Image 1 (tube, one colour):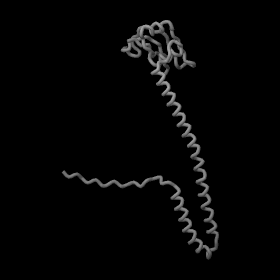
Image 2 (cartoon, rainbow, N blue to C red):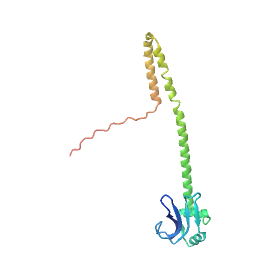
Image 3 (cartoon, rainbow, N blue to C red):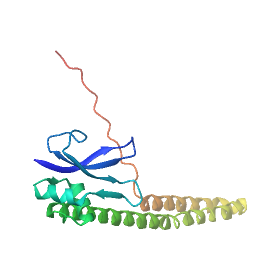
Image 4 (cartoon, rainbow, N blue to C red):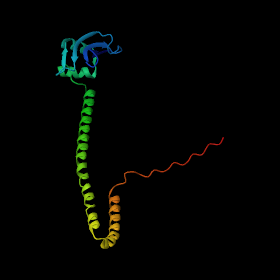
Length: 182
């Protein structure tokens, strides 16, 4: 069976392709029947030169284009993209759209995260403010206030611990292994 496909030529990291008619069992860059054009994807815009008469001749004689060549032929107006390939193109477009939506969603969540973190330091800044007032009090009055300040500090610490989710789960210690007898 004959295929119209791309044969890679060019240097490393600089691909250029010849559009060839080859036996489907031949290697990618191996023997071919006829070269009918070339494709340079790195040029802007991509350069496609194709002998349309020879391409039409081989298509009429049963040569099957590869996926990439089918797209090139569609660009040149020689053939429509096969339904199977259109389906894959549509799936690829859908995946790209989904990936873009997920990226945008992650970006908005990331932007919202610093806003949520910004109010958290404000209460911590307010907590030390009452402590200097207690230290400035005379020694006679300081003893009774210290006793009432300590339970308040313990309550504040308990509230902070309850408000923050546990970041580390307790790790169970592994059971000691017993030596095998035998």
